[in-house]
Length: 173
Image (cartoon, rainbow, N blue to C red; front, side, top):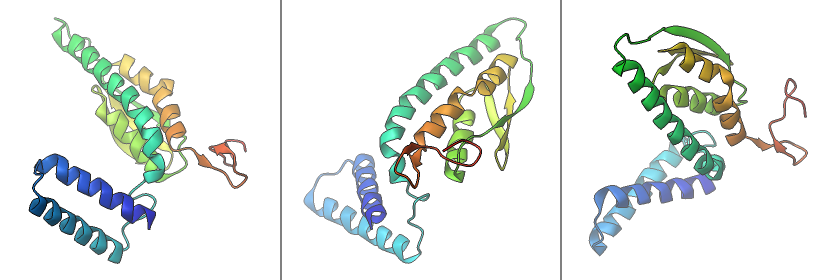
């Protein structure tokens, strides 16, 4: 039920932000529309832990500024490569191990790689992500693992013993 309420709140805020209307009639019609959409989604059983991950919200607000900074840095790096007369492009394909425990975490990691200019995720196979990079430096940045660590920290959950962090057979308890 918490996911449905959260989804309704997010949808209504998005509707309000995109429409910009604040007349009572339009606000009520927007609320009715959101209620109908949430009811249909609930009936279709598509509101779940991964479909609307409210458990990531607080940590996502810490991850997004870092990701935006990385996107800006990557934009500058790609612009430098393009502006140079000899264009030092060295197309590279690398495979990196994703340490996230959930598919949602791997999707966030793969999409974050693709969002940073100069790198594109071309395949995800279980916990191996194949990345195409414009330069060796961009490939080395992905292989360094900072983004992987940050996404893993963002998706961290409580283990059965109540401790925070990612626990698993190959990651320690």
